Image (cartoon, rainbow, N blue to C red):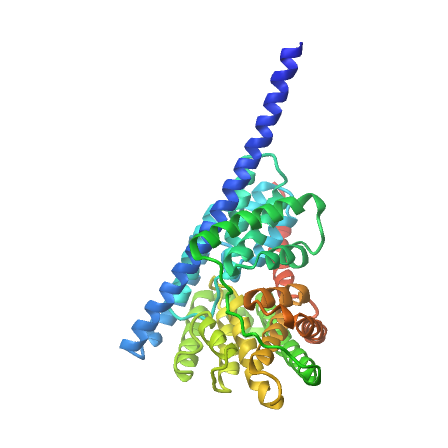
Length: 430
Protein backbone atom coordinates (compact mmCIF):
# COMPACT_ATOMS: atom_id res chain seq x y z
CA UNK A 1 0.00 0.00 0.00
CA UNK A 2 2.83 2.39 0.93
CA UNK A 3 4.66 1.65 -2.32
CA UNK A 4 1.47 2.32 -4.31
CA UNK A 5 1.05 5.71 -2.66
CA UNK A 6 4.69 6.53 -3.37
CA UNK A 7 4.20 5.70 -7.04
CA UNK A 8 1.12 7.93 -7.22
CA UNK A 9 3.01 10.80 -5.58
CA UNK A 10 5.89 10.39 -8.01
CA UNK A 11 3.46 10.43 -10.95
CA UNK A 12 1.74 13.57 -9.61
CA UNK A 13 5.12 15.30 -9.19
CA UNK A 14 6.17 14.28 -12.68
CA UNK A 15 2.93 15.68 -14.14
CA UNK A 16 3.54 19.00 -12.35
CA UNK A 17 7.10 19.19 -13.64
CA UNK A 18 5.97 18.13 -17.09
CA UNK A 19 3.50 21.06 -17.17
CA UNK A 20 6.21 23.43 -15.97
CA UNK A 21 8.70 22.24 -18.59
CA UNK A 22 6.12 22.61 -21.36
CA UNK A 23 5.27 26.10 -20.13
CA UNK A 24 8.96 27.07 -19.96
CA UNK A 25 9.53 25.74 -23.47
CA UNK A 26 6.56 27.76 -24.75
CA UNK A 27 7.81 30.98 -23.16
CA UNK A 28 11.31 30.27 -24.55
CA UNK A 29 9.87 29.94 -28.06
CA UNK A 30 7.89 33.18 -27.64
CA UNK A 31 11.11 35.01 -26.79
CA UNK A 32 12.88 33.55 -29.81
CA UNK A 33 9.95 34.43 -32.08
CA UNK A 34 9.87 38.02 -30.80
CA UNK A 35 13.61 38.50 -31.35
CA UNK A 36 13.46 36.82 -34.75
CA UNK A 37 10.56 38.97 -35.90
CA UNK A 38 12.31 42.11 -34.65
CA UNK A 39 15.51 41.33 -36.52
CA UNK A 40 13.69 40.24 -39.67
CA UNK A 41 11.50 43.38 -39.58
CA UNK A 42 14.55 45.63 -39.48
CA UNK A 43 16.13 43.72 -42.35
CA UNK A 44 13.03 43.84 -44.57
CA UNK A 45 12.66 47.58 -43.99
CA UNK A 46 16.33 48.04 -44.83
CA UNK A 47 15.87 46.14 -48.09
CA UNK A 48 12.85 48.25 -48.99
CA UNK A 49 14.87 51.38 -48.28
CA UNK A 50 17.68 50.15 -50.54
CA UNK A 51 15.22 49.50 -53.37
CA UNK A 52 13.70 52.95 -52.87
CA UNK A 53 17.13 54.56 -52.96
CA UNK A 54 17.93 52.79 -56.23
CA UNK A 55 14.53 53.52 -57.81
CA UNK A 56 12.40 56.16 -56.00
CA UNK A 57 9.24 55.09 -57.84
CA UNK A 58 9.49 51.42 -56.78
CA UNK A 59 6.74 51.81 -54.17
CA UNK A 60 4.17 52.59 -56.86
CA UNK A 61 4.55 48.99 -58.03
CA UNK A 62 5.66 47.13 -54.91
CA UNK A 63 3.20 48.53 -52.38
CA UNK A 64 -0.12 47.95 -54.23
CA UNK A 65 0.95 44.49 -55.39
CA UNK A 66 2.20 43.59 -51.90
CA UNK A 67 -1.03 44.78 -50.25
CA UNK A 68 -3.11 42.79 -52.72
CA UNK A 69 -1.01 39.63 -52.27
CA UNK A 70 -1.16 39.92 -48.49
CA UNK A 71 -4.94 40.39 -48.49
CA UNK A 72 -5.33 37.37 -50.79
CA UNK A 73 -3.15 35.17 -48.57
CA UNK A 74 -5.17 36.22 -45.50
CA UNK A 75 -8.35 34.99 -47.16
CA UNK A 76 -7.00 31.81 -48.71
CA UNK A 77 -4.09 30.49 -46.65
CA UNK A 78 -3.86 32.29 -43.29
CA UNK A 79 -7.37 33.23 -42.12
CA UNK A 80 -7.84 35.51 -39.08
CA UNK A 81 -4.34 36.98 -39.33
CA UNK A 82 -5.40 40.43 -40.54
CA UNK A 83 -4.76 43.54 -38.47
CA UNK A 84 -2.63 43.75 -35.37
CA UNK A 85 -3.42 40.35 -33.85
CA UNK A 86 -4.29 41.69 -30.40
CA UNK A 87 -8.08 41.52 -31.01
CA UNK A 88 -7.65 37.85 -31.97
CA UNK A 89 -5.84 37.12 -28.69
CA UNK A 90 -8.57 38.91 -26.71
CA UNK A 91 -11.36 37.09 -28.53
CA UNK A 92 -9.67 33.69 -28.18
CA UNK A 93 -9.75 33.99 -24.40
CA UNK A 94 -13.52 34.49 -24.51
CA UNK A 95 -14.18 31.24 -26.34
CA UNK A 96 -14.92 28.11 -24.37
CA UNK A 97 -13.67 25.34 -26.65
CA UNK A 98 -10.19 24.63 -28.06
CA UNK A 99 -11.65 24.38 -31.58
CA UNK A 100 -12.97 27.94 -31.42
CA UNK A 101 -9.71 29.27 -30.02
CA UNK A 102 -7.64 27.46 -32.62
CA UNK A 103 -9.27 29.52 -35.38
CA UNK A 104 -7.62 32.63 -33.93
CA UNK A 105 -4.48 31.38 -32.18
CA UNK A 106 -2.55 28.44 -33.60
CA UNK A 107 0.83 27.64 -35.09
CA UNK A 108 -0.62 28.24 -38.53
CA UNK A 109 -1.81 31.68 -37.45
CA UNK A 110 1.60 32.41 -35.91
CA UNK A 111 3.49 31.44 -39.07
CA UNK A 112 1.12 33.43 -41.25
CA UNK A 113 1.32 36.45 -38.99
CA UNK A 114 5.10 36.53 -39.13
CA UNK A 115 5.34 36.04 -42.89
CA UNK A 116 2.63 38.53 -43.82
CA UNK A 117 3.82 41.18 -41.37
CA UNK A 118 7.26 40.95 -42.95
CA UNK A 119 5.67 41.15 -46.39
CA UNK A 120 3.85 44.33 -45.37
CA UNK A 121 7.04 45.94 -44.09
CA UNK A 122 8.94 44.84 -47.20
CA UNK A 123 6.50 46.76 -49.42
CA UNK A 124 6.35 49.88 -47.24
CA UNK A 125 3.15 49.41 -45.23
CA UNK A 126 2.86 51.69 -42.21
CA UNK A 127 2.53 48.85 -39.72
CA UNK A 128 4.31 47.58 -36.62
CA UNK A 129 5.55 44.20 -35.44
CA UNK A 130 4.55 44.38 -31.76
CA UNK A 131 0.84 43.57 -32.14
CA UNK A 132 1.65 40.60 -34.38
CA UNK A 133 4.11 39.43 -31.71
CA UNK A 134 1.19 39.32 -29.27
CA UNK A 135 -0.80 36.99 -31.52
CA UNK A 136 2.30 34.88 -32.12
CA UNK A 137 2.95 34.65 -28.35
CA UNK A 138 -0.68 33.75 -27.65
CA UNK A 139 -0.59 31.11 -30.41
CA UNK A 140 2.60 29.49 -29.15
CA UNK A 141 1.37 29.30 -25.57
CA UNK A 142 -2.03 27.99 -26.71
CA UNK A 143 -0.31 25.16 -28.55
CA UNK A 144 1.73 24.47 -25.41
CA UNK A 145 -1.54 24.34 -23.49
CA UNK A 146 -2.78 21.53 -25.71
CA UNK A 147 -0.04 19.33 -24.24
CA UNK A 148 -0.97 20.04 -20.65
CA UNK A 149 -4.20 20.36 -18.67
CA UNK A 150 -3.35 23.94 -17.68
CA UNK A 151 -6.04 26.60 -18.21
CA UNK A 152 -5.70 27.57 -21.86
CA UNK A 153 -7.13 31.08 -21.36
CA UNK A 154 -4.42 31.77 -18.80
CA UNK A 155 -1.73 30.55 -21.18
CA UNK A 156 -3.07 32.76 -23.98
CA UNK A 157 -2.91 35.71 -21.61
CA UNK A 158 0.64 34.79 -20.58
CA UNK A 159 1.69 34.47 -24.22
CA UNK A 160 0.28 37.91 -25.04
CA UNK A 161 2.16 39.47 -22.11
CA UNK A 162 5.38 37.72 -23.09
CA UNK A 163 4.99 38.97 -26.66
CA UNK A 164 4.81 42.62 -25.59
CA UNK A 165 7.62 42.25 -23.06
CA UNK A 166 10.01 40.61 -25.51
CA UNK A 167 9.10 42.88 -28.44
CA UNK A 168 9.87 46.13 -26.58
CA UNK A 169 12.19 44.84 -23.81
CA UNK A 170 9.57 46.14 -21.38
CA UNK A 171 8.71 43.41 -18.83
CA UNK A 172 6.53 45.63 -16.63
CA UNK A 173 4.58 46.89 -19.63
CA UNK A 174 3.95 43.30 -20.71
CA UNK A 175 2.36 42.49 -17.36
CA UNK A 176 0.32 45.70 -17.25
CA UNK A 177 -0.82 45.23 -20.85
CA UNK A 178 -2.06 41.72 -20.11
CA UNK A 179 -4.02 42.86 -17.06
CA UNK A 180 -5.41 46.18 -18.31
CA UNK A 181 -5.97 45.53 -22.01
CA UNK A 182 -6.15 41.80 -22.79
CA UNK A 183 -8.03 40.55 -19.72
CA UNK A 184 -9.27 43.86 -18.20
CA UNK A 185 -9.11 42.21 -14.79
CA UNK A 186 -6.55 40.82 -12.37
CA UNK A 187 -6.65 37.04 -12.43
CA UNK A 188 -4.85 35.66 -9.39
CA UNK A 189 -4.54 32.18 -10.86
CA UNK A 190 -2.97 33.56 -14.04
CA UNK A 191 -0.55 35.96 -12.36
CA UNK A 192 2.17 33.35 -11.95
CA UNK A 193 1.84 32.31 -15.59
CA UNK A 194 2.08 35.91 -16.78
CA UNK A 195 5.13 36.79 -14.69
CA UNK A 196 6.85 33.50 -15.51
CA UNK A 197 6.29 33.90 -19.24
CA UNK A 198 7.49 37.51 -19.18
CA UNK A 199 10.66 36.53 -17.30
CA UNK A 200 11.53 33.64 -19.58
CA UNK A 201 10.80 35.40 -22.87
CA UNK A 202 12.53 38.54 -21.58
CA UNK A 203 15.63 36.55 -20.70
CA UNK A 204 15.83 35.30 -24.29
CA UNK A 205 15.48 38.85 -25.60
CA UNK A 206 18.18 40.11 -23.23
CA UNK A 207 20.51 37.24 -24.09
CA UNK A 208 20.22 37.82 -27.85
CA UNK A 209 19.79 41.60 -28.09
CA UNK A 210 21.27 42.82 -24.81
CA UNK A 211 19.79 45.23 -22.28
CA UNK A 212 18.58 48.30 -24.12
CA UNK A 213 15.94 51.04 -24.09
CA UNK A 214 13.74 50.80 -27.17
CA UNK A 215 13.92 54.54 -27.95
CA UNK A 216 16.91 55.40 -25.77
CA UNK A 217 16.81 57.68 -22.74
CA UNK A 218 16.35 61.43 -23.25
CA UNK A 219 17.08 62.54 -19.68
CA UNK A 220 14.36 65.16 -20.12
CA UNK A 221 12.20 66.48 -17.32
CA UNK A 222 9.16 68.74 -17.25
CA UNK A 223 9.21 71.74 -14.87
CA UNK A 224 5.91 72.40 -13.12
CA UNK A 225 5.56 75.72 -14.97
CA UNK A 226 5.29 73.81 -18.26
CA UNK A 227 2.56 71.43 -17.17
CA UNK A 228 0.13 73.15 -19.51
CA UNK A 229 1.82 70.94 -22.12
CA UNK A 230 0.30 67.94 -20.34
CA UNK A 231 -3.20 69.25 -21.05
CA UNK A 232 -2.37 70.19 -24.64
CA UNK A 233 -0.79 66.84 -25.49
CA UNK A 234 -3.50 64.92 -23.65
CA UNK A 235 -6.36 66.65 -25.46
CA UNK A 236 -4.71 66.64 -28.89
CA UNK A 237 -3.52 63.04 -28.54
CA UNK A 238 -6.92 61.90 -27.31
CA UNK A 239 -8.77 63.59 -30.18
CA UNK A 240 -6.54 62.26 -32.95
CA UNK A 241 -6.09 58.85 -31.31
CA UNK A 242 -9.84 58.50 -30.80
CA UNK A 243 -10.43 59.52 -34.41
CA UNK A 244 -8.01 56.85 -35.62
CA UNK A 245 -9.67 54.17 -33.46
CA UNK A 246 -13.15 55.20 -34.60
CA UNK A 247 -12.17 54.96 -38.27
CA UNK A 248 -10.77 51.45 -37.76
CA UNK A 249 -13.88 50.26 -35.93
CA UNK A 250 -16.34 51.78 -38.42
CA UNK A 251 -14.56 50.34 -41.46
CA UNK A 252 -14.14 46.93 -39.79
CA UNK A 253 -17.86 46.77 -38.99
CA UNK A 254 -18.75 47.74 -42.56
CA UNK A 255 -19.34 51.17 -44.01
CA UNK A 256 -22.96 51.90 -44.94
CA UNK A 257 -24.13 52.25 -48.51
CA UNK A 258 -22.47 51.30 -51.77
CA UNK A 259 -18.94 52.01 -50.57
CA UNK A 260 -19.21 49.51 -47.73
CA UNK A 261 -20.78 46.92 -50.03
CA UNK A 262 -18.02 47.39 -52.61
CA UNK A 263 -15.29 47.00 -49.98
CA UNK A 264 -16.93 43.87 -48.57
CA UNK A 265 -17.40 42.28 -52.00
CA UNK A 266 -13.97 43.22 -53.35
CA UNK A 267 -11.49 43.11 -50.44
CA UNK A 268 -8.42 42.41 -52.58
CA UNK A 269 -8.92 45.30 -55.05
CA UNK A 270 -9.61 47.50 -52.00
CA UNK A 271 -6.28 46.43 -50.48
CA UNK A 272 -4.52 47.24 -53.77
CA UNK A 273 -6.06 50.74 -53.79
CA UNK A 274 -4.95 51.20 -50.17
CA UNK A 275 -1.43 50.15 -51.16
CA UNK A 276 -1.40 52.71 -53.96
CA UNK A 277 -2.49 55.46 -51.54
CA UNK A 278 0.23 54.47 -49.06
CA UNK A 279 2.78 54.63 -51.89
CA UNK A 280 1.60 58.12 -52.87
CA UNK A 281 1.80 59.33 -49.26
CA UNK A 282 5.24 57.77 -48.88
CA UNK A 283 6.48 59.49 -52.02
CA UNK A 284 5.08 62.83 -50.82
CA UNK A 285 6.82 62.42 -47.45
CA UNK A 286 10.16 61.48 -49.08
CA UNK A 287 9.88 57.97 -47.60
CA UNK A 288 9.32 59.01 -43.97
CA UNK A 289 5.89 57.37 -43.67
CA UNK A 290 6.93 53.91 -44.85
CA UNK A 291 7.43 51.18 -42.25
CA UNK A 292 7.10 51.25 -38.49
CA UNK A 293 8.17 54.86 -37.98
CA UNK A 294 10.70 53.82 -35.34
CA UNK A 295 13.59 55.75 -36.90
CA UNK A 296 11.60 58.96 -37.18
CA UNK A 297 10.23 58.69 -33.63
CA UNK A 298 13.64 58.03 -32.13
CA UNK A 299 15.17 60.86 -34.14
CA UNK A 300 12.67 63.52 -33.07
CA UNK A 301 12.72 62.26 -29.49
CA UNK A 302 16.42 63.02 -29.33
CA UNK A 303 16.08 66.54 -30.68
CA UNK A 304 16.25 66.24 -34.44
CA UNK A 305 13.87 68.37 -36.47
CA UNK A 306 11.07 66.83 -38.52
CA UNK A 307 8.65 68.62 -40.83
CA UNK A 308 5.18 69.48 -39.54
CA UNK A 309 3.67 67.45 -42.39
CA UNK A 310 5.07 64.18 -41.02
CA UNK A 311 2.32 63.85 -38.41
CA UNK A 312 -0.73 64.08 -40.70
CA UNK A 313 0.93 62.03 -43.43
CA UNK A 314 1.99 59.26 -41.03
CA UNK A 315 -1.52 59.33 -39.55
CA UNK A 316 -3.03 58.83 -43.01
CA UNK A 317 -0.55 56.12 -44.03
CA UNK A 318 -1.15 54.18 -40.80
CA UNK A 319 -4.93 54.54 -41.04
CA UNK A 320 -5.00 53.32 -44.63
CA UNK A 321 -2.65 50.41 -43.86
CA UNK A 322 -4.80 49.42 -40.88
CA UNK A 323 -8.12 49.41 -42.77
CA UNK A 324 -6.68 47.60 -45.81
CA UNK A 325 -7.06 44.18 -44.20
CA UNK A 326 -3.39 43.20 -44.28
CA UNK A 327 -1.59 41.90 -41.17
CA UNK A 328 0.39 44.45 -39.17
CA UNK A 329 0.31 46.20 -35.81
CA UNK A 330 -0.39 49.79 -34.81
CA UNK A 331 1.89 50.07 -31.74
CA UNK A 332 5.01 51.53 -33.36
CA UNK A 333 3.21 53.65 -35.98
CA UNK A 334 1.03 55.13 -33.22
CA UNK A 335 4.08 56.02 -31.14
CA UNK A 336 5.59 57.56 -34.25
CA UNK A 337 2.50 59.68 -34.93
CA UNK A 338 2.50 60.71 -31.27
CA UNK A 339 6.15 61.72 -31.48
CA UNK A 340 5.37 63.87 -34.50
CA UNK A 341 2.41 65.39 -32.69
CA UNK A 342 4.61 66.30 -29.72
CA UNK A 343 7.14 67.82 -32.09
CA UNK A 344 4.42 69.97 -33.66
CA UNK A 345 3.22 71.18 -30.26
CA UNK A 346 6.71 71.81 -28.83
CA UNK A 347 7.05 75.40 -30.22
CA UNK A 348 4.07 76.38 -28.05
CA UNK A 349 6.20 75.64 -24.97
CA UNK A 350 9.63 77.15 -25.71
CA UNK A 351 10.90 76.80 -22.14
CA UNK A 352 10.15 73.06 -21.98
CA UNK A 353 12.67 70.44 -23.21
CA UNK A 354 11.82 69.14 -26.67
CA UNK A 355 12.21 65.50 -25.60
CA UNK A 356 9.70 65.92 -22.76
CA UNK A 357 6.99 67.30 -25.07
CA UNK A 358 7.62 64.53 -27.58
CA UNK A 359 7.18 61.93 -24.82
CA UNK A 360 3.89 63.54 -23.82
CA UNK A 361 2.74 63.44 -27.43
CA UNK A 362 3.61 59.76 -27.71
CA UNK A 363 1.71 58.86 -24.55
CA UNK A 364 -1.24 61.10 -25.42
CA UNK A 365 -1.79 59.70 -28.89
CA UNK A 366 -1.16 56.07 -27.92
CA UNK A 367 -3.54 56.34 -24.94
CA UNK A 368 -6.10 57.92 -27.25
CA UNK A 369 -5.90 54.96 -29.62
CA UNK A 370 -6.01 52.08 -27.13
CA UNK A 371 -7.77 53.79 -24.19
CA UNK A 372 -5.49 51.94 -21.78
CA UNK A 373 -3.83 54.75 -19.79
CA UNK A 374 -1.72 52.62 -17.47
CA UNK A 375 -0.26 50.61 -20.35
CA UNK A 376 0.41 53.83 -22.28
CA UNK A 377 2.52 55.61 -19.67
CA UNK A 378 4.25 52.46 -18.44
CA UNK A 379 5.30 51.31 -21.89
CA UNK A 380 6.64 54.73 -22.94
CA UNK A 381 8.50 55.27 -19.68
CA UNK A 382 10.07 51.80 -19.94
CA UNK A 383 10.99 52.23 -23.60
CA UNK A 384 12.88 55.43 -22.82
CA UNK A 385 13.99 54.80 -19.20
CA UNK A 386 12.65 58.29 -18.40
CA UNK A 387 11.06 57.34 -15.09
CA UNK A 388 11.32 60.90 -13.77
CA UNK A 389 8.61 61.78 -16.33
CA UNK A 390 6.12 59.37 -14.78
CA UNK A 391 3.78 61.94 -13.21
CA UNK A 392 3.29 64.09 -16.34
CA UNK A 393 3.00 60.93 -18.45
CA UNK A 394 0.32 59.57 -16.12
CA UNK A 395 -1.65 62.80 -16.26
CA UNK A 396 -1.36 62.98 -20.05
CA UNK A 397 -2.56 59.38 -20.45
CA UNK A 398 -5.61 60.00 -18.26
CA UNK A 399 -6.56 63.20 -20.09
CA UNK A 400 -6.06 61.55 -23.48
CA UNK A 401 -8.16 58.52 -22.56
CA UNK A 402 -11.02 60.69 -21.31
CA UNK A 403 -10.84 62.85 -24.45
CA UNK A 404 -10.69 59.82 -26.73
CA UNK A 405 -13.89 58.40 -25.23
CA UNK A 406 -15.71 61.51 -26.37
CA UNK A 407 -14.81 60.54 -29.95
CA UNK A 408 -14.80 56.73 -29.70
CA UNK A 409 -16.72 55.05 -26.89
CA UNK A 410 -14.65 51.87 -26.78
CA UNK A 411 -10.98 50.98 -27.09
CA UNK A 412 -10.02 49.77 -30.53
CA UNK A 413 -8.76 46.32 -29.56
CA UNK A 414 -11.86 45.21 -27.65
CA UNK A 415 -14.19 46.70 -30.23
CA UNK A 416 -12.45 44.74 -32.99
CA UNK A 417 -12.37 41.59 -30.84
CA UNK A 418 -16.18 41.62 -30.71
CA UNK A 419 -16.26 41.04 -34.47
CA UNK A 420 -14.62 37.64 -34.06
CA UNK A 421 -17.05 36.74 -31.30
CA UNK A 422 -20.03 37.69 -33.46
CA UNK A 423 -18.73 35.56 -36.33
CA UNK A 424 -18.57 32.50 -34.09
CA UNK A 425 -21.99 33.17 -32.59
CA UNK A 426 -23.50 33.45 -36.06
CA UNK A 427 -22.30 29.98 -37.06
CA UNK A 428 -24.96 27.26 -36.86
CA UNK A 429 -24.67 24.74 -34.04
CA UNK A 430 -23.43 21.28 -35.10
